Image 1 (cartoon, rainbow, N blue to C red):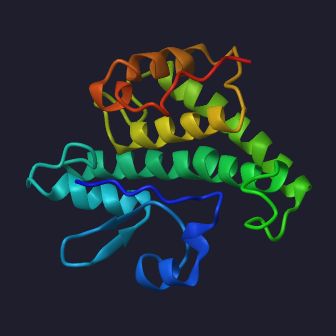
Image 2 (cartoon, rainbow, N blue to C red):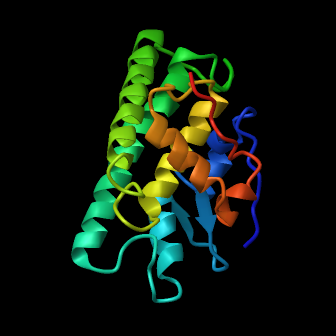
Image 3 (tube, rainbow, N blue to C red):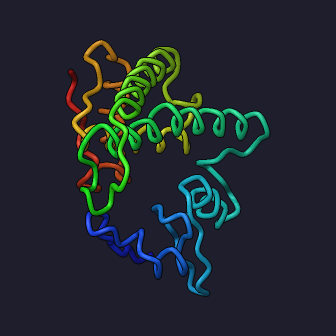
Length: 190
């Protein structure tokens, strides 16, 4: 697999040619297959990659496992990733005035608070089980990891009281798939 960097600060993902050929919504990530097919959105890309070998491990095998993983992944998207993204784009300078054409700081700060509530929620979940969706590492864990990475980038620290979430994230840092990624640094506690 080859990774292509897209210059967010230059608004490369918002240019008409990118939106016409890769992803009409102008968001990332996008997986482009050898035949030119583009799959956008984290969940769709994960589903595709996890099913390639016929033995899905990240998205679940049995119906209950699949349901729980997807439920927790969606919660992580809504409570962390999306909320932090809105905070970044509205409550901070974001990608700059040439990309951020409209900003609503009040909305951004409400989403920041939602992300903090999400951190407390996942802390409570991880006090009772080793992984976000249960007993095994899954797409839900990856989604929370992504949220915490983004939180660190926008300087939104995990509250110090979220000891289970912080301990879980520290354990996740030991996974080769996480530890080899330079952006995946441990978020600082507040």
